[in-house]
Image (cartoon, rainbow, N blue to C red):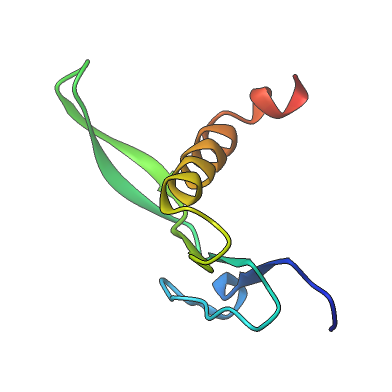
Length: 90
């Protein structure tokens, strides 16, 4: 692979639960996707726990190119889009 600037790596298919991907030069960032699993999540509105499908994501990026705040905004936006698939249609 040559000239890549952003890579998505998945270890979910082989049972990986969490990992930290390493950037290969000249990449700018790499997103690590792990296996999704059902986990209890507290809901403040109903004051109880609900079963939710949780998929761990890990973003590694080159700080010489990407500001940390931009990386955090990207991860937050990605989380928002994946949590409600209807947003992808807009």
